[in-house]
Length: 562
Image 1 (tube, rainbow, N blue to C red):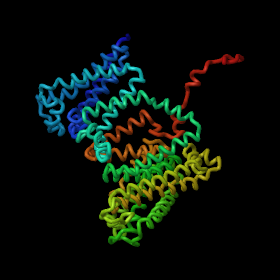
Image 2 (image 1 turned 30 degrees about the horizontal axis):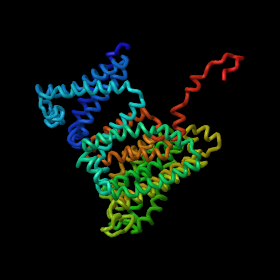
Image 3 (image 1 turned 45 degrees about the vertical axis):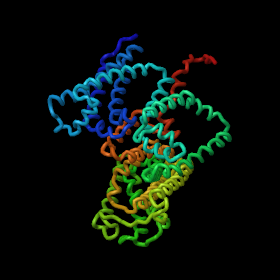
């Protein structure tokens, strides 16, 4: 057994203590305590604090350099130090009342930290850190084939407990109502349900071995793979169509918002992901589509033509494409950061003009355009009267736009966009018309964003200039980066993670940007190619060097051994 590197262990423990103090002082522990993971056992707030202790113990064990026994000891010491951080808050609170400096340092927080034992419970967190650190240190020396199922099991308990309202309601409204009552409490998982979930997930991981299944699937003949693919696709489609009926209208509205961002993501994926043209004013095209539908369909004072929704949508797409060409012409010769700043200016100009007094007689100014009719006129008693119709419309439009985006990506024009992204000068030397190709990228991307704006106007039945913030453009750019540049499935996954999940946790909205930033930093550090990257991105960011490194050096004139 090697010597334990105590400096690394102490560093990990101190970092864990600082993080623990931080999550307490910004209110994460206190506010997240309202969402139980396992009813009567642990809440999301307590989970966030325990994850800090586990993380410190795991990193301390991994970096200890002391063998198996050293890993257990190092994990325990790092966890103990991490637990002393929040405990120090309790001790200082007995001497100095610092709530004037930290608003979140409330009596409820200290009840959570001491498990309702008062100052007598100050030892619980350091002791928990010691025990959890030793356990996670033992876990760190397990072989990967055991680590993965256990990690997936506990992660699944947290995820299922967190999303228990979305899972429990459909179960109770189905023939599996008994199973739903067995696994779930009124809020969160039941204790028995959590144990069952852990056993099931760990067992499934051991039995399935996903990588082995993927390899076996890849070896199947193409016809057989297609035969297996279509039934899975049909079952998934039926599940998506049924989902809002079982979960509720709020979930349908969240998915509709995600689908709108997917439409914009497909558009910016052409401009940024394929052509490499960073557009931070993308919200301008979204605004053009929304205002066009509002002006042509509104029954209020600013309505112009009182057209049906579906008659106005083509105008919204065409006008957005025209604006894409109009905005693209002045900036064709700009590259890199200068292009981003120029497009940012265009987006802000459109937003300010839409809400200004100058255009108030036509666009409504700050009061916006109201009384935009729903896309489908149905009686109030119909199940399509609420957000459900936008849910189905948005998903259908997203599917159509995804098909168009895939065809464009695989076409000659798509290859020209990729060539421009890689090197404009070389692309031009090979015969690519830069002006025409860039304008087509702006035009197609703007058209998809205009369609998203049109559906958004139908969703909220009104449109305001305040909805066209810069953060909409940043959101769309971020979901492309997180999902994978140039990847069509990546856009969908990125929208689900960055738009859908925060919308489902509106009660924690004040911490949305904190976790948003943490997710982006983690993605850039550990998976810069995105969650579902394109093949090109994989090749660029993960160049295989193992064959070159392992190749034997053969002297000149000799033949390598077989």
